Length: 84
Image (cartoon, rainbow, N blue to C red; front, side, top):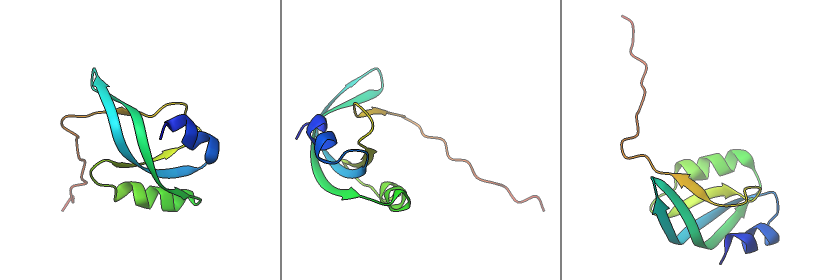
């Protein structure tokens, strides 16, 4: 399914998607083909689902014209150190 089809069926909503086909250029992943898993009405639920996504699943908002994902080779994790 093309992203534009998903946007037409589910306007202004979060959706859980499986990426079926994409291409990468300069550390940017451009998604070409997706499978709709389900629509998500609640933004808080969308955040929870996004944080638990694995493999080729993503949560995206249909207000975006294209699915473009910045790829990071070495994500940085911050932690707060206790000042004892």
